[in-house]
Image 1: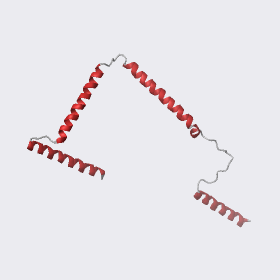
Image 2 (image 1 turned 90 degrees about the vertical axis):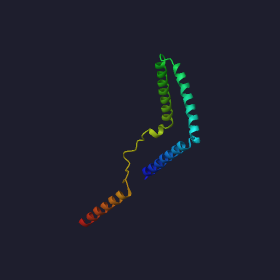
Image 3 (image 1 turned 135 degrees about the vertical axis):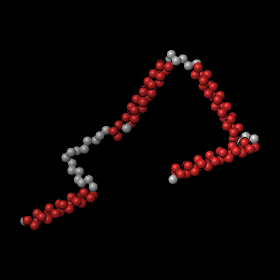
Image 4 (image 1 turned 180 degrees about the vertical axis):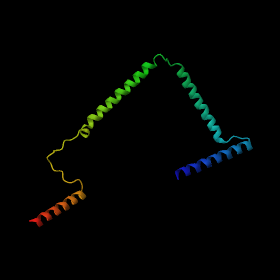
Amino acid sequence: MATFVVFLISLILIILLFVMKNFEIYRGKKIFLEDFFLKCDDWIYKIFLKIKSWWSHVNFKNTKLIFSWIIGSIKNLAISIKRRFDHKQSHFFIKREHPVSKNKGSVSFFLKNVSDYKKSLRDGVENIEE
């Protein structure tokens, strides 16, 4: 059902796109959203130019040192978080030892009923033999 809804929405949007483009060609005039998209394209292009100019100043001789520093700091951060978590949650992860001699009984009420029924049958057979 969700696939069908997505298909219908996509089909409607494609039809709308073709109708708008046909309207633009017929009138010879741009629709208002296209001007907005052109302004956004210019803004994105300027950002890419700034990134390109910043990237040209990067010294690739020190990139190995930078990456090793980043990896080391991430490792130290992960270790500190793990230590803090282990310290706060240590009682949760420690396995408690249960006394072995304690009789735990049956696991569920159904099994308890079955064991009681079998016990009553055994007691009934023992009473008959006496």
